[in-house]
Image 1: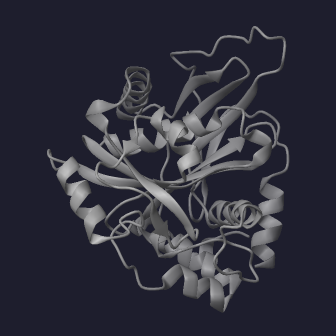
Image 2: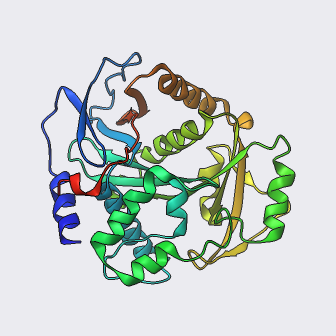
Length: 307
């Protein structure tokens, strides 16, 4: 775990602006030339400096560990943690079936936000990375939390009735995904970076076709999710979510019924992914912008990892 901590601290150090975007795989780094964005972000009009965020899938054990520690920190502050561990990392069995995304402050390299897109099936490109994190932490309690039996295909399906209502809502039988661990560091909550993460998560899923998204949400956050196109699952109320020990709603949305501005941004991002672009720029607000990076983790032998 000490090596993970040292590497995490090093990765968050400020870096000079390079002429190449470096996407680290599990054992090496690939330098990908950055081409000019077809939709450059306009300069701000408020007189305040623009904060730039890099949004992308997490690619390494260190990035995963940073995300798990951010989740632990925020959940501990909010009183959501159900059990502690010496590694101070928040994990569960659904991480093995998730594509994790991160928002990084481009000026410092610091991870400031997370989102995981849970899929019904295991994500084999991440199982070896998670195994390496658990091996480095050598934490019995964390391993138990990460590998305990999976009660449902998705965590927001907290009962048979919720599952029946999701099936009734999903009449076209689209693939079903879950938004989970949607967390922004308190210092960056007013930057609209959460919207960028939401767009990226939906675009990733919708590359494969239309989709249904669900999420467990405290009532006070329903309005935020409504801006993404989520509605309260019909014929459902407040249910107890064991993961946070709170009463919450199950929210749902279909990709063919998203708000028009949201759908336009997602379609633009999906188009960039399909074109083979390595990045896509998007204005989040007058004071912040997102640079989406497109890459995926690659399998590699553990003995080639440089710590």
